[in-house]
Length: 300
Image (cartoon, rainbow, N blue to C red; front, side):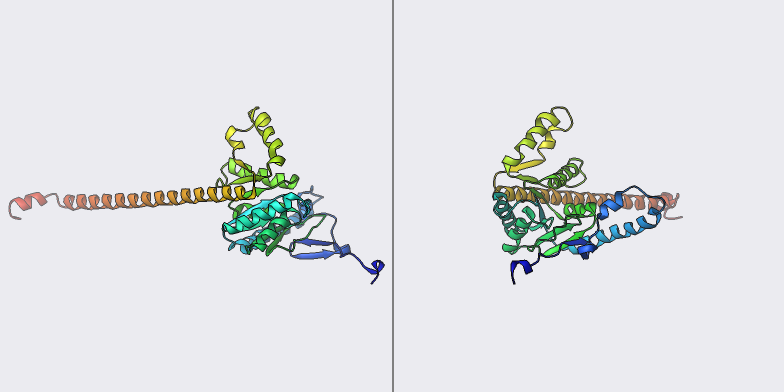
């Protein structure tokens, strides 16, 4: 076959479980249609069905990921190429996480996501990809062992937070920033347990951290402790060590809280039993007003 006879694969677009190609690819995403302004009264008929689709995404996601076990999400740019040092760094951190007993979750796309999935797969760990419907569909990378495609960003984000015990964030763009700051907000507001958030690639993140300290914190928009919710790692191994150490701390806290709750429950049960015995004893003595007289005169 000559070069003129060859043809590139047709672009692919995934809408939930549906695969579309060529003229079947829509011009708008599910999120765009959901969030667009209502046109007349048609939303009365369309939106109830969207609610059912949203519900189905949560059900499918929960079902697919329920048995993943301890996992860490790795975020980063889709634009990084395999010859980029950050690509190799993502592979290394994924291998380290697998060796530490974690599954690795990414957005399932190319770039750093692909590198992390590849590192996890080559280390014989579970490599998870949570894909999203986008106009420039990228498809799930070949290193994903367990993949789930979502129409809606908010459903996908819920899965990352629900099934991850930590986030490792490599250099990326707006999507990476979105995932990073959502995680920070959830930890800052105590909506989730204080899981570790690790920034990997200090040279990339230094400007952001400086701005947060010198501008955002200096003007009273955040507290000093809020910046410390992120930890910067200088190497893949350091990132893994931070995740493992924080995970051990959280498990120890959970176990201590469980033991304290058990002690409180036992103490409450013991106090309840004591009160019940006292009430029974008081009831026995107060049942017959002449009981003492009867004992004194022989019962007559």
